[in-house]
Structures are given as structure tokens and as C-alpha cells.
Image (cartoon, rainbow, N blue to C red; front, top):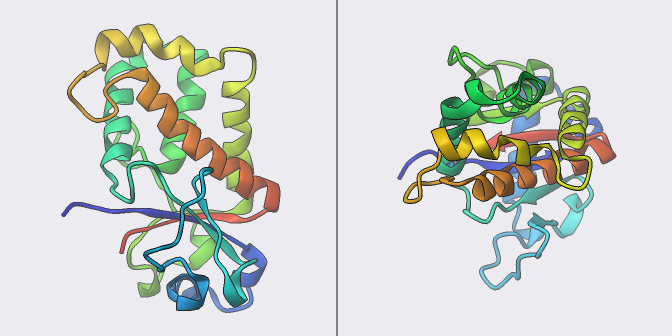
Length: 207
């Protein structure tokens, strides 16, 4: 079946009402609650990608639905494409993209990038299935990088095209061209921007 990842943003103050080891369970319980309406098979998804829960936790968290679903494969392959072309990208663009991707899903050049801020949920056994947890401060930092990368009429990602086309493109593979890479990062940009606006955490869960 492969690895999955569902991305949520959540109210840090609400999570902090319980000890760190209980926070992830609190978020999962709220997400799984039938009262959210998120599990209704007839529920219409929002065009924006956001799933807003109903019920008592409506103002505590939101879920982001990637177009490719909850599979981690798109994120994995985006990291692979970046590894193939990054050495051929201007350092002024490479360094912020390294930080952004490494802060979300890429394992980095040494395979040891950390994607979890322990202050959010602690580091005990209650963090099973936790792939990503970014504190509000870290979210703001990553959102600022995204904003800087995409400012201007064309956005900085277009400058990756020559390197991507020559060293990373695969017309038959996942995230095989620059538009697909841009779309995936655009989804992450929306997640970071909204979480930063609210001062919330970003969480990636594998169920």
C-alpha cells in the first residue's frame, strides 16, 4: 500500500491545554470524530483543497487534501527530483529550497533532515505515525521562505526549469516535470501561509 500522509493544521493553544504526550491523541480524536462530517462519503470537497470540520472542533483544526490524495509518493518523488537537479541551481535559489523542502518532507543531502519539532507533541510513544510537526515559529519561517521564493511576476521556481529539465525530468514518472513540482510546492505554500496567518502548527500523520 505504501506510506500515506495526511496534513492538518491545528490550534497550538488548544493542543497545549493537555500535556505533550496527550496532544497527538487529542488531535486524532477530534479528527476521527464523526461530528466533523469529514468522514461522510457524500461530502463535497472544497476547490481550495481545505476540508473544514463541522461540530465542536470546527475552530480547532483543518485538513488539507492534496490532489494526489494521501499517498506520500508525490512528496518522495519531489525530493528525488530536487536531489537530481539541485547542484545545477543557482545557490541563491538552492539554499532556500533546501531549507523549505528539508523542513517539510525531503530528507536532505545526508538523509537526516528532521521534520518534527519535539515541542509540539513531545517525543514519547504517543507520537506513533507522526511524520511532520512544525511549531508556529517554524511555520512562520518556512512560510516566509515560500513568500520570498514566489514573489514577482514569475516566481523564483521558474528559474529551476533549466536544471530540472536537463537533470530531473521524467515524462513517465511522478512529479516528472517542473509544473508538477510547482503544483506540489504550491499546495505546501497554501498550507504554510494559512497556518502562519493563524499562528497554528502544521502536522503530517501516517495512519
